[in-house]
Length: 252
Image 1 (tube, rainbow, N blue to C red):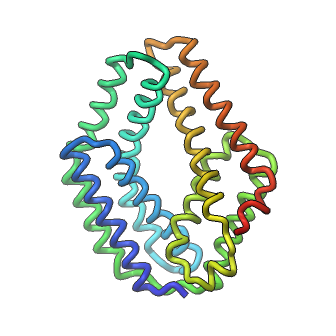
Image 2 (tube, rainbow, N blue to C red):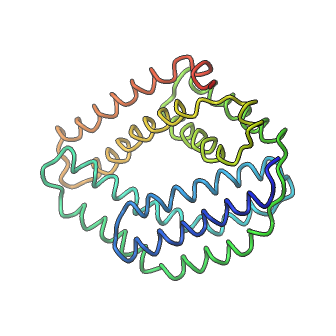
């Protein structure tokens, strides 16, 4: 069993990390803080997914919607930064338009800093006392359900499914620290393999974001666009190799 005390403690730590990263980003504009903020949100989203599965009458999944607006707004900043970063790799000079877009996205996010903090703090106070114990049986069932989903998807890879598959992998990984040793022994998951796989899918997805951003640029250059596409194709081949015999590889 995962106790409600352990779950609540995990949740509160994530919330505090989110508000810390939000404040630091708006103070120093270090984009790694936006990345950290979104990772902490994803950890909470994973927890909410487990709660939804195992505590059927919980109001926590519904209340999570109020906080997701901060996550989405941070995502606009993150996407702008990734596109800017990808173009920096393949081009000597990044267009001033791209710099302006990144600056504008950051400024717009930080103009609402106090509103974001208020939303997050209200949500934290509302949710932190609502958690219930989660049984080992339900946790194991949850993991097996999603590992089966991944096994099916990786039999024949479709590009449109990859980003969702990565989300599933990361949910399973984010929840793993909460698992007791008996649960881990029952599941026997190769966490290192799953981490390598999700990382490769993430790098592939970054090229998709860069391609979409660059395709709409006024200063589009076909040679540079092709470089982005070739990088994405190489990442996709790597993913295909990694997911061959997925059932055997994820078993620890």
